[in-house]
Image (tube, rainbow, N blue to C red):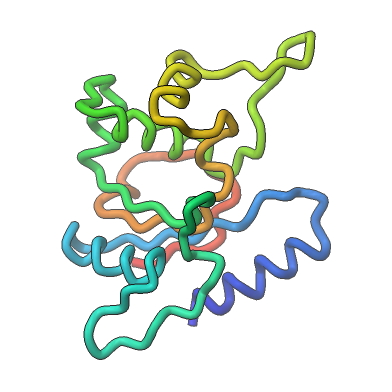
Length: 159
């Protein structure tokens, strides 16, 4: 039901807003196991037994677009303390930091100003240089809303 409202809002934003950023839907799950099931249902079109497929195309991931991400407080803590144990965890931090951002700030010559380490990591992982959170429309999380997080495109939170 809420996802249907999100879809209506997304269409409305596309029609009436000059802002190209999509609204963001956050689902806070009780544990990582449930978050994995919800993520697979929404992002990968793999519903659990007895549950109909999610028909929310805006949440489905594709080879060239990451619309839904799954993250938990462990990943966030690891990356916040700069103790990221993997390149993927570091990439997740850049993704979370750029949800709702369509481009990087620019210098006086119009060149993008990347965060420290981003350009090297993007090249290593063979990822595009745009903000990795640019296309995120849904965040499936566990234990994420205990501290502040600045993303002004969040329109719905379900727990």
